[in-house]
Image (cartoon, rainbow, N blue to C red):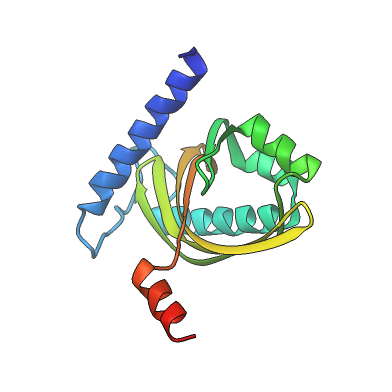
Length: 178
């Protein structure tokens, strides 16, 4: 295992630990009035900045805007696609630039953001239509993204998505009624 793989694995474990601890938090989660000692960004401002960053990311993915994505992603960005493929920041940006990862539409249907100081986790649902060769495929998925605050700016450090497939019983029912 090379150092880069180990580094990504560590970041993944940290992100999952944060997400797990946040999942056990009270459902009426309240952000503190100040994110940290000496911080000038208040929690409501930070939440709005994160919502804005999420919307920018959604728009950049839909348009294939490599420059905007480059600015939104941290240098050690780690991307796990819904099919399990893993890409670094550079690999993902190159795939977008070459048109290998081309979205005809990319829409976030819901997002919940949990803020914990200089780290935030966004979880939600998305629907995409992609161009894969000559085919167009559409699917819905769930995502988890980790964001880190650098000064007054949020950078996306990790993205993990999972395709939502129809339940087997729903498929059986639709097949038996046809």
